[in-house]
Length: 132
Image 1 (tube, one colour):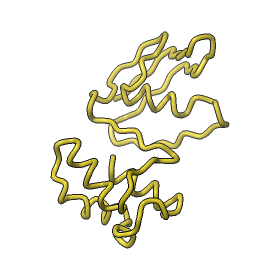
Image 2 (spheres, helix red, strand yellow; image 1 turned 135 degrees about the vertical axis):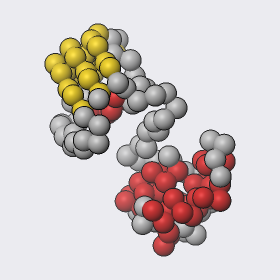
Image 3 (tube, helix red, strand yellow; image 1 turned 90 degrees about the vertical axis):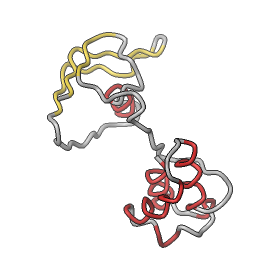
Image 4 (cartoon, one colour; image 1 turned 90 degrees about the horizontal axis):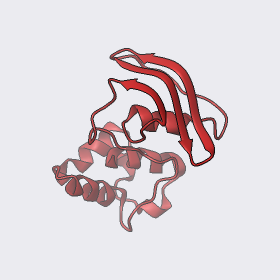
């Protein structure tokens, strides 16, 4: 279980997140919504152990190295969608030949051989998640 209590995250003089409490049960799914700048990404970074809270208690967070952040507007290397996923797997010490299966899992195998630079926004996000 992930437990957050009295969390605050500050960036210099700016408050990035204030949260009284949040409990997430194992296997539970939840959606996070809010206006731009409301702290959604900061909350995910705290839960993923990528951002330490300035104040408060956080328990049961994900282990370092088990979390990858896939950006909303991901950057890619030159080459195909498949070559980008292969590169990421190899860089992580994983089997690069599994890249095709990751694209397939995410419904992205149809554009595996297309240049990453011409993918639509949704296609880019699928490839970014496969790469992550």
